[in-house]
Length: 258
Ligand SMILES: Nc1ncnc2c1ncn2[C@@H]1O[C@H](COP(=O)(O)OP(=O)(O)OP(=O)(O)O)[C@@H](O)[C@H]1O
Ligand SMILES: [Mg+2]
Image (tube, rainbow, N blue to C red; front, side):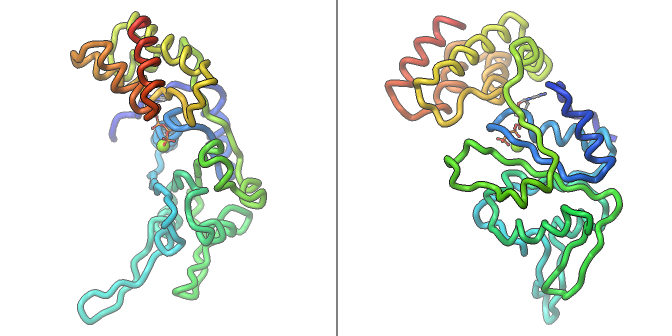
């Protein structure tokens, strides 16, 4: 078996997920980018010894992409199960990343799977497939993103147990940087201080602020020998904004702190 993915628990999420799984209640992860949502699901799937199928939803993602389609092979037309159908049949955990991005027919398709029925209607085949006992549906959703443009309807949201993921407290975030990248504790501390400072600069009006992911990237660059100030500039400041004045101001600030 492969190694357990590294995940540092932030609150009660492991316990909550285990109980959701025991009761087969779908699980919704809310929160900004880079806060460990995907890592958490990889960790839980491994812990529960379940196969994980991840779908990154985007505006073109349709129910056909998830359920399956007929394809032409030579002179024959054959049916190909999509990832959702596969997960249902084999009892895997399916993770619909950024579910609100998908087309509305995806949401419609999963409704019967996310209540007591636990079944999927495949309209192209005219059949209903019952989910395997081990099957579980997990989805993520970034509420701040796109300013309410793509919301989830209450009738969808209320089918899930939901938890918010956010940046961990400083000590834990330091620990994550050290474990993920083997960087010195003193440098990890400085990176977390920079993040805390920028996260508090709400007047910058950034859509999303410094994520743990950006800190991990900066720590990796430093660990592999790139100069510290350059690492912080390219891994933390530049990805945050394209506003030149803000970039210069943030780089000045970071140069003083690293
Ligand atoms: N609690 C944590 N334990 C271990 N690593 C973490 C944790 N939180 C964040 N990380 C680190 O941050 C990186 C980004 O996390 P992840 O990819 O899970 O974010 P995400 O919330 O899924 O983001 P997105 O919404 O963009 O998909 C991980 O690769 C890992 O290095
Ligand atoms: Mg993710």
